[in-house]
Length: 88
Image (cartoon, rainbow, N blue to C red):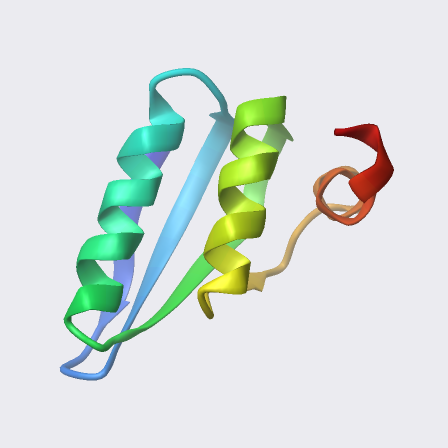
């Protein structure tokens, strides 16, 4: 997994994610987003190059969405994983 800021202004940041969101990467992503949210920035996550999210990652991303984080360009698989609430 790679997490890199692709756009950052005083009001917003977009992180580009690449690879599989799982394991130790989940808390790293959470911390990166929460740090920006505490600065009252709009946070966007570009999921175009995310191939998979494990169960822990799905829970974390759903919580970030509830906090106002926007998800950009998810693959159909990622979209399904995030939308299927009954699987958790």
